[in-house]
Amino acid sequence: MPRHTRAGRLATLRQLLAEARYTSQAELADALAEQGITVSQPTLSKDLLELGAVRQRDVDGALVYAPAGEDGGEAAVEKLARLCAELLQSIRHAGTQILVKTPPGAAQYFASYLDLAGLPGVLGTIAGDDTVLVIATDDQAANRTVGLISEMTRTGRPAKEDS
Image (cartoon, rainbow, N blue to C red; front, side):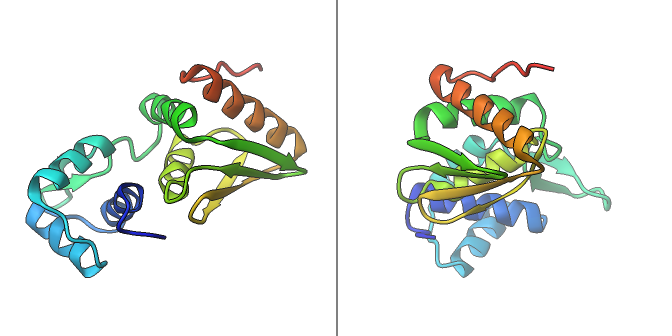
């Protein structure tokens, strides 16, 4: 993943927030530097805002940065819908595998929101530089997921699921 791109930096930051707890932006900047990413404090603040990161108390009572909506929810689905409209270049599927194409450097960022949205029938994603492989539980779930993502791409808004 090209970490020097904005999308790569955001994907790395999201991963760091999911894997450990950081009490300050300085700690986050140091962790990013260990990943080969140099970032200024204003840029880091904007990135945290973009990711919807929040400060919350951990089990020890310390305030730490954490990804917003770790359990998914409406905010993640709304963000996914906006990303579909902005980033999705094509979507194809065969059986339970769905192939999503994005601009270079955006696939991991897109996949992280696809995972966070928790769409029914999606087992998970594998992301490269400009391609996301989405694995569905069965052919019907794959068809439904392609329909949902296609609708979000057209409208930029969460799609309504047909039950």
